[in-house]
Length: 355
Ligand code: DAH
Image (cartoon, rainbow, N blue to C red; front, side, top):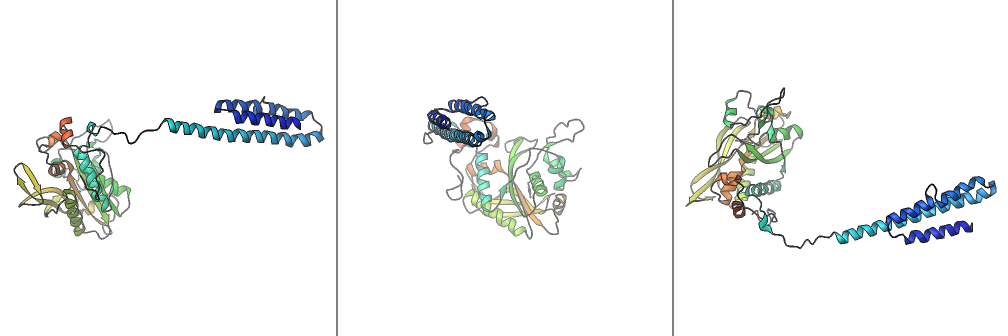
């Protein structure tokens, strides 16, 4: 028995003195490993008499468990020390000033964030879809049947089809995200979908890649009054001033009735002032979701109604921040970005100001 006490005292001291995980493990192996001291003592049990075994069996087991417990305790302490040492040596001084002139937020990104802030305050969430779309989502489900003349107005970029595969397109608008959302979510639905869109078109006011924000609301009892209210609140929040709007009847295959919304503006030299004056400028398309579109997504038009809208982000950015030529936006000129870009550290918010 003295043997056992002595062995325990010896290992307890060694374990306590172990200064790292490696030496602690060496001690564990020396005591409890297959050929370790305690294991060898346990092997000796076989040669003992029954009476001796009755005493030594439990005593040796106790020794083994005690040493294992001491090893575990020391291991946790060493791991904690290692973690504290790493935390102390890997600190970062968050107060270090960074050079914000190095990079700025592109006005398109800024405007999309402003829109997300305004619409999320009205209960909308942000949805996304792929830039490369199939015919079903970009056209057919949006009530543009094959051969429909409105398809031609989209100046679509067609992808080269892989053999045996359907020909894909670069999405011509963000409206296919409506379809993806309605197929994957149950109403009530309230989403906006910002993203890149593509049309084969290029001049002072058109670029082959541009940005849109789509909006979709599907709820029982939704009507045109809700559509108008949401969009009127949106433009005033976006331009950060009271903005007069008018809705004109229009046609889109995926909405019925359809409208375009204009905002009041005037020219002041080269500058455009939104909200005052006697001219009207169209800024978005909208309407009540066509029953065929709801049906294509498995939503019963007898139960649910909804409205949708879509607008060009780049043009709204130009109007709000006074940039003269759309093409400069995507020229990746750092002088332009330095002038028109936004601080990446300032978050758009309704409480502290959008921009
Ligand atoms: N997708 C249309 C376009 O690119 C814009 C649009 C108009 C979207 C009316 C809508 C809508 O959701 O209701 O010209």
